[in-house]
Length: 333
Ligand code: 8YV
Image (tube, rainbow, N blue to C red; front, top):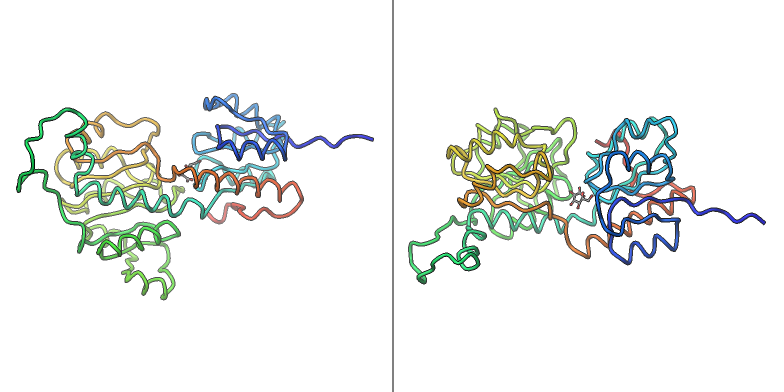
């Protein structure tokens, strides 16, 4: 009797132990225990040998990788929500299914967005560094380390999907007025719950907000959505928070406008040329104008385990010849 071979699943980065163990039980899983990112050649090689690839945001799954004549992949089970690192159209054209891990990172990402919304005006990192970096602190003073109140300000959310709405819920509890720009208005019940004002014109919204939060995915349509022209519409004392993707903002222009005092500041978790962070942004952070985080919006152990569980469900249902729950189709982007 011939023994059925388990499908080869290549996982590009180190995942939580419980997820890796379950993957080994279910599949012929090739793990990356030391977490060294794969080179483009190694990714191309994985596509030629594996039935299923489990990439993350740090892997570029290009049309070139997908269109190799001997590409063996049947499923790309992405460990992540955003799929801008995968050429979904090329995969689809080649009959390769793509899945992602939506919903499980919504609340964690919204928490981190709220943390940045608070951190910038309340000078959180600057204040903390006084104590940790040996700077002098002579004690409390009524006029020292003053920031700006968050309550009562207007927050303009760009992209009112799951994460945008979760940010709005939190922000409302902090007394912010919720405004948003989206392809379509949200359902009336949600708009009422959030007390949210819809702007079909992003330009109009940008010019009126105190705080702007980017919560839309990066797609060809949203690349540099905050272009140089649009960034110049933003008020001098306003600031921008981005926990979505760096590519949505023209980072060079944003940096220049903050340096020149034409935009108040920014709280950034993502960068246009990640993992490169421009030294000019780092200088602005040291000057207390911006708060920078290293792409950790969804970085909770609970979230990573749930992402891994979603990846396993997507692979298992696919291999059992069912439609995986989190399929990504080109038309969705
Ligand atoms: C993930 C993210 O950690 O899922 C996303 O879209 O931006 C991150 O929070 C990362 O993408 C994992 O691949």
